[in-house]
Image (cartoon, rainbow, N blue to C red; front, side, top):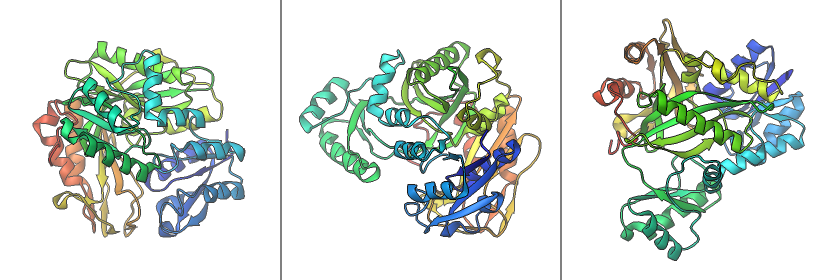
Length: 443
């Protein structure tokens, strides 16, 4: 096991990793920007190093600064959390060159799965269903020809990156060229790669993902599925496990497909295979996230498996002591992402001082956050400030528990999305599980 580990992240995920390390007896190193000097993860870690100015590009995305902090403090491994450098193949390569273990898959796997076009081709070869579409589009002539084959509506999607950027919906040929130019420009600006491909737009679908855990000894385990269809502009708001849309027979097929996907790329570590599920119960590979997911706590609560600890253990070369038949899903878990945004003002980000904080409690209520009383939320980073997660024997009980927890949660001084989450889980579309990725369109 690693004696010392550096966490190349901030906020609640940095706190989450530090807690896991403390329980495992691993010393921790926090890195922080000048804006995060008073952040919780800095005070919880055994050591801390300032790596740059407030901007993420000058600090948390500054690979030489992060690696220098690891070398300076003698850290043997780096945990990237999610976002930031977590799916950066170049960073994984640099870690290896510095003889520091990157807690995640190899740079080759990150690169292959980060290239959405290559990922689609890899999945097709492995027998995993893929959304009908085409490979990379080179010019307008090819664009028009492929669009006619696919049919409208369709999506133009960036090969690289994520977070909903570089994606354009096209409902007819008159929109095609403008959408193509817009998508390529945004992809080039956001990811430094303007390459795009097209796929059929599947409407009124579910977004269902499967958690995988793989060691370096050839063992692949799937840990059930998560329902992630409650989204706004491709950003997840609420997740739950198991999915209310997946029955026993379908679950077996989806978990098997996810396992085949992981084996096809020689995956090691924690990862997620994401699928689109139609109303006819047909599912298609969408992408593979080669990192820990924001919504990993719902899987932890229904399986009893600490994903962060096992992510670290398999990176250290440990063999999984359990196999697929040992995995049992118990009860139902729901997670609400709490963002410092004002839903009444088009989700305007809200930074500022937290003047009052009351954390909801009770049996099987979990609140993952880096907030504390009088903490000032800086304006430079992602707006997610907490994750509220509950677990109960049934989905109906989990919904009621979440309603109660949201009512109890108090975060004053900044606007946040808690009241909107409370409204959403009380709507019939959520209560009956019929909601799809289009549920919040226009809101």
